[in-house]
Length: 221
Image (cartoon, rainbow, N blue to C red):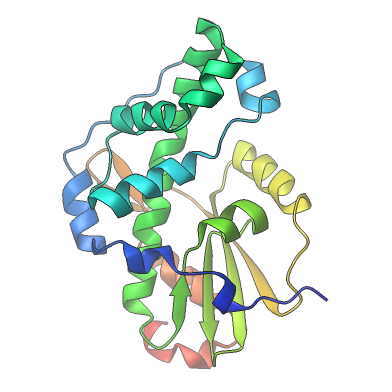
């Protein structure tokens, strides 16, 4: 039986000194661009190193949110050996840059929401762990009573996102002591911060209404 043990998954949020309000302040002046290039091999076939590793490494080491361009530059630098070995052509690299640029806002959005949830739910253990994300498909894990765990799968409610979510779920053998919660979100009505749509109070209330132990969070509903 596969069981979740929190001791095996250190919380990356604790390593990030930025508050949710500080994150908003930082990104409020950032611009976003979305290159139109799409390459089918980049989108569906080539297995690239995980984007999130570079994203969180930058924040933990330098205590700042990278811009879109810096994120892509750092990602390529982090995996220089991979790119030297593969020797991708210009079309692949342009398609990859476009994909990284599209992924970037969701990484910022998830980080902000996770920090916000952790700040608000002071009576629970709220963690983000990159191994849980990559290997288990868990975007956020909330534990109450030290032994009851909710795995939150957070994604925008679009066809593409649902296809990606379905594929991601099929790759993982679920923990038997964890309740899995899908939280599809619409941008309409979400918090706008500069060029970003963020998940905040509305999405937290939606999340708590989906838990089976609502009495534990009465002040938030």
